[in-house]
Image 1 (spheres, rainbow, N blue to C red):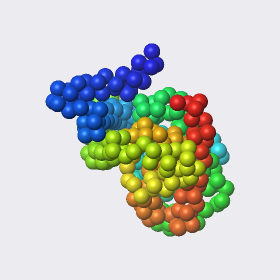
Image 2: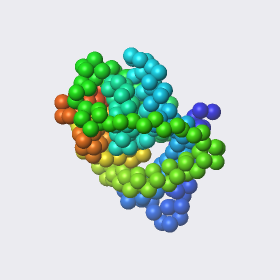
Image 3: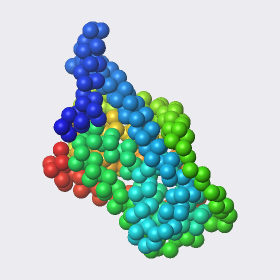
Image 4: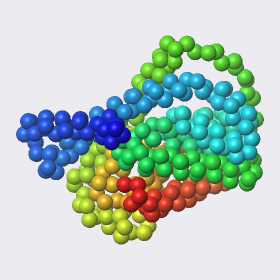
Length: 331
């Protein structure tokens, strides 16, 4: 039963077969490079868009129960590592990329929440949202997806706890620390309002990420059909012990979310890249993208920014090598 759900519902293998038959009718050979690239591109774009819209609608509906004021109050009830764990878990029902999470991080920090707690949220939000769990299941299977999410949460909790222990509150910019908060009562939304909010989130997020989906799928199609397999294996397979580090660093300059990374990761894995290398690349893109680091620099001072980047980078690299070591158990 689960195989059917993973292959036919999440993975939409039926769609791949259908597109392949239509391309053959049009005279394209999907076993050739050009036909294979077109098949990969059409199939992955449709699949990711369907999953994107469905997931955003569901997650946005859940998120409607956790507006910033309510989230702040929930986090304020917990202390110590328990607060970091709750912050990391709440990060899973917030926006899909780090640039979207930073304004919430700033709001929570301004509200006086402990710095480590807000950083647990900031790490978790782009790295391990619910969308990543479902999308990873559709490509890599349930075991990989669950381990990925669990380890992402561990990085978020450990990173936030370490930042808290270092007492770096003075590394937050003055205008954020001195911001005055107004506690605005949150009115309860009706079901129709939540549905409207979810639909608006789908439309807004789709417009924002669709270009990156096209770019990501295009890169994935190129890798899948045009780059020799031995080249991928040489740089990102067993033959290169630094593959995880290369992949993590390569992901940093990019700006994308999980939806744009998936087709690239899928193509790399199919060409022989190690699982840990592929997942490190995804984590690097979603958590440490250059645009989000530029935004974050406006809110925190260089020392804290450097520590945040170092914690995330080391955590991602450790996770990558861990997945490489246990790949044979998961795939």
